Image (cartoon, rainbow, N blue to C red; front, side, top):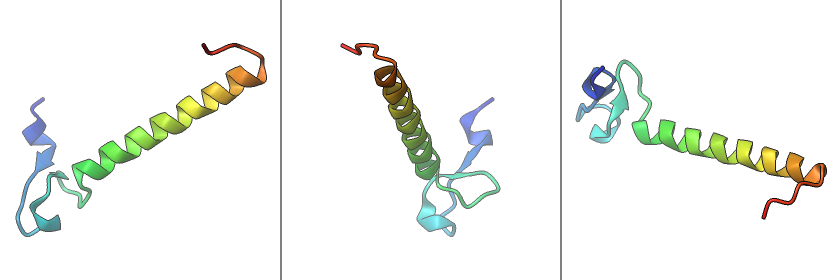
Amino acid sequence: MNYRDIITIEPEKRGGKPCVRGLLIIVYEVLEYLLQTRSQISNLRRGAMLAIGVNLR
């Protein structure tokens, strides 16, 4: 699968920023969401490890 099948750039949509094809969602927003979710999961795991007394260092 080619990224061009998923990502489009159209000047009249969202200021010409790369969007997910067929949606008005900017690729940056998807990546930002994934990074935030990953960070939240990491924090939850870290908290759980600390709660059971595992040393993370």
